[in-house]
Image (cartoon, rainbow, N blue to C red; front, side):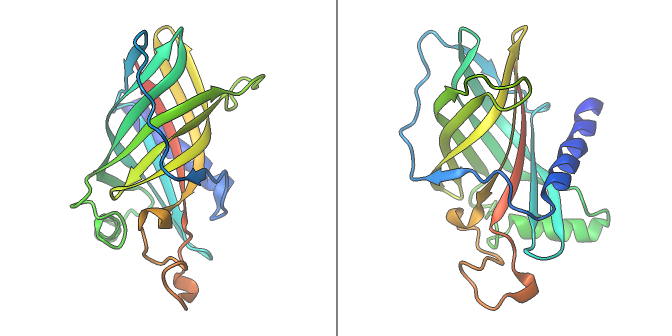
Length: 220
């Protein structure tokens, strides 16, 4: 667990260094996709929730940003001949963590706001889901760079959209690791607070609609 706790800040610091409030690696969004099915000959790898991290960054259009992580509840990935072919992840929205604010009272205030109806309505929607629909390999990808294109359905607050993003996937000695870094438009999932798509004259209170996400998945 000490190693995992060390990795999380590293992931977030890398995202912040490459982001700085700027929209980077925007995921392509579509309508809901036809769900994928588990092949009969697939080997199932269960996601290790303790070792898997979902890092996030939210920022104002001008000025400050906040960062943290969200817990993973469960999930499984499907392999055929050691190649990723599908899977699903359940994200535990009740485990939103704010990492950049050290003051306990201010940290709790932001955490509570993120859990409220202004943002993710956690009491009504305690889980978010990502269900893979289509996976294709990126030919001749350099080692360590994205080698798969992942397409799947992302469900937040009961709203589902198809989302496409690249990921680096490695299978070795029966263990699967995957990493991805992308942003998506929160307003499509009815996360309205501070959004210029829903409110006018926000000035310095305008919040970027794009949420930056860093995934680090471990499954065995």
